Image (cartoon, helix red, strand yellow):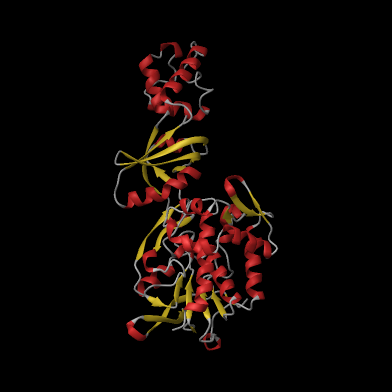
Length: 433
């Protein structure tokens, strides 16, 4: 691995493929291009490749999901349909076979999530880097690309000529694949560089917003519950009073608001609505398995059992202890009230709170803390089969720099691998002319 990009431009052939970014999409693109006979150079701004991959899946690297293709697309709310061709050409079975072929055995866990058997993201990154070296791919680290080199072509359509680095070097090639990631976790190298280059090349860049990110709330009681996790609840998102989305599963209260799988899944839509100026509220159905009538019957049974106790003690079988007083407060019931003094109307009001404990969403955590970025290079301007720009010949985009994002569970890495494979394969055959 080379550690800098100084004075290397003259050593790169005009027939080469240049990949900018050594993340999942970039390394996959480079591998596929090299396997098709291209001479490939990968330029990575960080000191080592795959830095963001090392923290995915909590350091275990959730490489894909075993769901059927339509289910994969459904779990990629950010332009998942755009990936139809990419997924058809390189799907989740291909990804698993790819890593198994690199001596990285995989396993499937709850929710169809696929991980390396070792539970080490480093094994995934190291296997991809080793494959690059086996193929003779030139991997240059600490290479900070400053922009694209473009030239006019026949008919007025511009084509790619290469890239220039911050130190003045130029890398010339017949194809350039931009796989620089999004704007989340900038410490891993994803600082939005690719957006600027795409815009300079004439592309529309959909405003980057945080996705898979915790939500901040205005309510003090939420923050006082920091550290409390809930399972089997339903979170319901309201925009200007209208129900717009809901998710069932696990969530977590934090010192700033709420997080956890179902909150992260709602956050993409929340971020977009907040950006548009809408008023957002979140309601938590604490007992989604029961309708109001069934829940009222459950409350009645508990109240009969604990009729001589204070209501805060009469609900211990129904809720986690820390959650009881906030729920009672929302139902306008004092915790010290004796259970046998609660009226029918008060019990009904309590049941309604249990089916919709509300809070005001004031914002999301910063995009730098988001797992992925929503937004990016407009998919309308990219060929979905080849990942080639429709505006500049020989220019390709792959991975999070494209306006594609999914839920947690291996869907984002699958999208990156599929886009990278398409760009790598087609950059060899379609970049000339």
